Image (cartoon, rainbow, N blue to C red):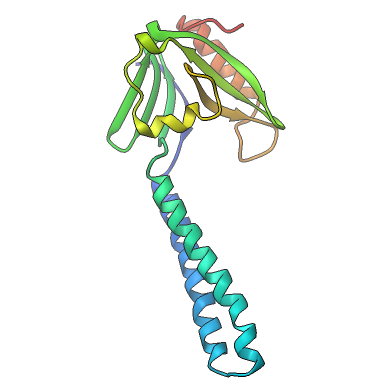
Length: 172
């Protein structure tokens, strides 16, 4: 099956990042606790690394909790839009797709797909964030900008050409 991968997320890199944040958070909490043992004014100053460490630990927990719900892979295929997470995959079929387009969002753009919800299978929960802040029947597929880590503007041309070649939907 011919496909154009728009986004692919490595779970191992995400786990390494979360582990690093946990390690730094624990180190700060430990250093603050040691400083608190000195007593006096030092005990008050120890609150700074303790609070910073706890915030980092909270952020790592947030990343891990919410990271499980995000798609690992997103691709345009000859049969529609494929969104996968782990062993789960969802195909928005081409016959449900109405059009694709580029929409400005703050200082960058997003490639969106517009579809007919009545002709598409129900969206799994992990795909729901793609429709966040969009009208019903619209999913944001890819953010494009000159600035990293967003996709480069050339991806728009690749996507447009792929969509036209496979007649997936209109691109006004």
